[in-house]
Image: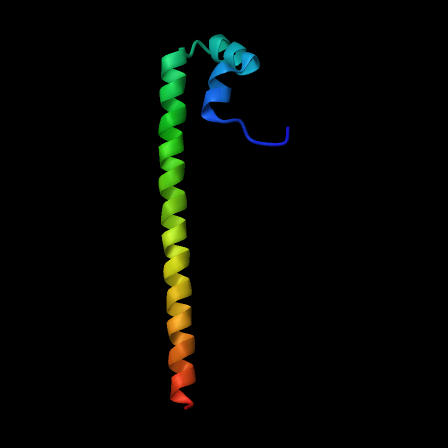
Length: 71
């Protein structure tokens, strides 16, 4: 597989549907679970991005402050 499945693709995939049915997980419950997991993942990625950007900002501030001290 060249890419990850989208939520829509997962919900209509026949193999995943068989596994879901074997586990007695309804379509709506499975869709809700995937949407919830997607929101949690997105929040985590956004938090990581914000942390990385803040760290990069402060590294740059330190570099500029250090350069200005030598001038």
